[in-house]
Each structure stands twice: as C-alpha cells, then as structure tokens.
Length: 114
Image (cartoon, rainbow, N blue to C red; front, side, top):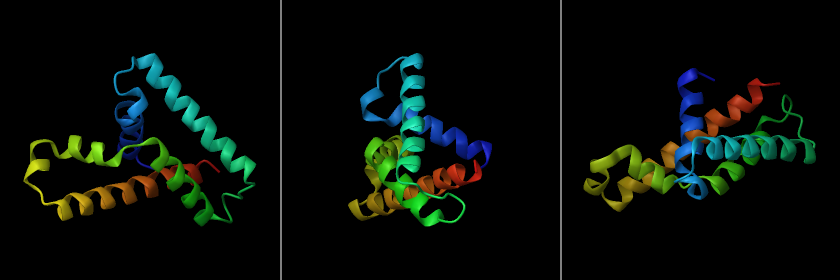
C-alpha cells in the first residue's frame, strides 16, 4: 500500500466517520485505533487465513468500511463545488468507484501485513 493510499484511509477515518466529524485529534486517533482493533479481531474471530483467502478479507473489509464511513459525504467533500454540477447518476458512479477503490486499497493493506 502506498503512502498516499494510507493517508487517504487515515483521512477518511479521521474526517468522514459520522460519529467523529467534530472530534478532537485524540478522539479521532482513538476511533481509528478502535476500528483497527475491531477489524483485526473480526479477522481472528472468523478464523480467516489472510494469505489463502483474500476474497474473504475483501468481503470483511468492505462490510466494515461501509459500516463506518459515509461515502456520499466523502464524495461531496472530495468534489467540493463540482458536486452540485453532477447528475444523480454521475454522483452514484463516482461514489461507487471511490468506494470500490478505497475498499480494495484497505484490503490490500490488511493483506500486506501478513
């Protein structure tokens, strides 16, 4: 996982998780740490062999990320003033593409830790 991808993942957790939108840095760090611990525990609980079952890792990460992040909100922030110029279909395509790339990058990060 590239440094840039890691920064996006951290930024998304810090700034776009709805429960911490106005939180302080220590609060954000605590949420990120808890999210990481929870994901690791979920992998252990489900007895997922990371190296031999990357699809299961991807599926677990997808569910975990979708539960914790508001991709529509992230899309609005990323696109800024351009958001209002897009049709609903364009917004959905952007959100879907961004979410897919984000989940893939996060899952690859998890897999690279093995």
